[in-house]
Length: 329
Length: 118
Image (tube, rainbow over all chains, first blue to last red; front, side, top):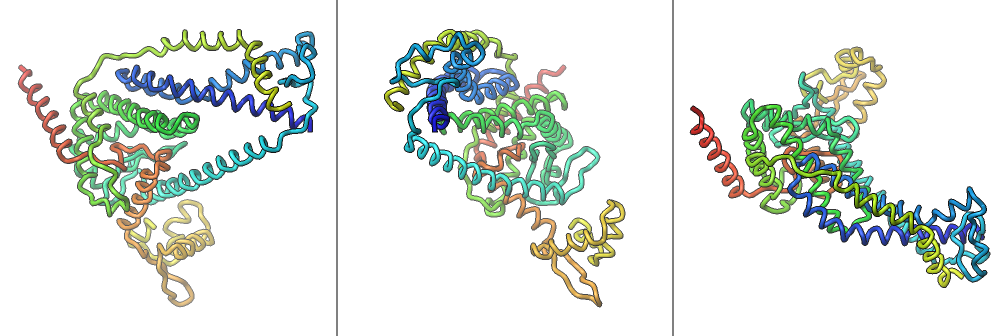
């Protein structure tokens, strides 16, 4: 029972760190998104990945900072400060376990939240698995050409890179026929860059890490991450074919092919008209900017945050114990 | 499926002769696979003498259309974007006016370039 009560305190502490981290990162994220909007796509993509991981990393750093006196006491018993407190004070400690019984309500809440999270994960996994099966079916029903591209003998336009660990390029015959040779080269070069960058895998990781953000911020970050990846691949395609306008033309022409297909054939409802991503991509290809953005500007604020956290570890530890005392004692 | 779509003989031994030997797949595996595809309604079969002869129930076009629809449907639910990076977003469309404007911009830029060339 006492070990369970100790675990209860650590779980509540971790939850508190996660909540604070979520609030802090939710405040910072929109400002960072505004600041990196003009960066070149490769650096922007890296910055967005770091931003996605920020809540998890801040939570971990905060939790470690709060526990630092407890960890120090494990290895250096002379640093054990528990005896200084009276019996009514909560002990966030690996050595001195609390004597009270665990609170059922807290464990019940944790069980409910964990069960809901598990159901959400299972539901998402089932849906992703269905999409994966469809993608694998398309890949397996075609033979790759000498250029490694799987051509679908279909009048339904599709041009995509599918798969997480061994991505494959899928293109419909009608898309290849609808583009000029130079535009086809641009399209294939774009998709090859997705394969090299493993964009689908990084997107899954970023999406998982960003689950701690509020949904509105998470969705915006997801869209910006996808756009940065597309623009990075557009730049690679432009370097390969040697003409940025050819890539822009390939994008617009492929989009027009997609637009001519009645959505009923694709088995979905039209989401809406007006695609900001297409415009931003074409504008970026037509008006290239010099490379902007330095990730190193973030080193100082991050270092200051970590220094503050660990310098204040002792104070944070006692503050958390004081907050937990009326709840648990 | 590719073998049958291209008009190959649908009897298990013939399929094994065409594909199995090359890929090191046994006749039993070919028979099991054909049976599974039949159970999934992708193949139809007729009994000829003692053997089943299989033929495609769906065309390659219809098969691909179904899978593409599943894939794009998954993107609409935002579950397939873990698996797919599309050249143009498969779930949202730009309007014809937007595309006309973008095409006009690109054409204008090409004209400017040609004008600048000596």
